[in-house]
Image (cartoon, rainbow, N blue to C red; front, side, top):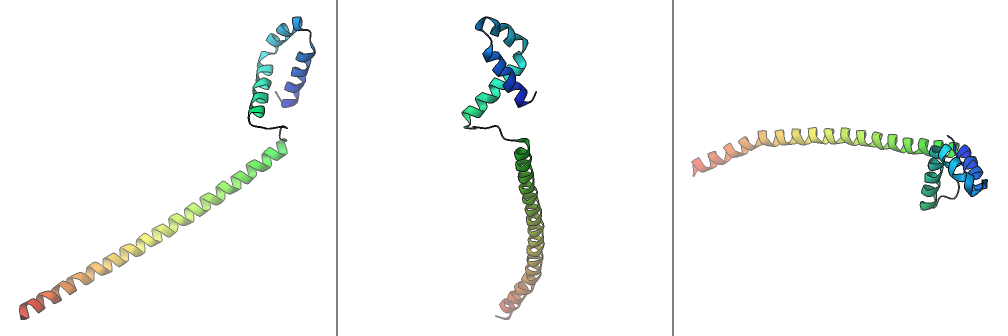
Length: 113
């Protein structure tokens, strides 16, 4: 069911005399309930007009582009972090290799005294 059909059905429902409304409502309950729920949602959220399909598709495309850009940035950040972790590991390895030399130098100094 599209919005226009729901609106037309609801308008037809309102034009009927009160005695015939109940039967009409029961015959068209799903469509009318859907229309009423949509109208309640729009009213609660301050939406005055129903957006066009084109506008909704444009918004979806914008959000998808933003999401994809975020993923690209995230993957780049992950690569950068991995590189930095590798550099950090290399520096730690180099520093550990230099520690025994420094330690051995201290032992020589202590033995001389």
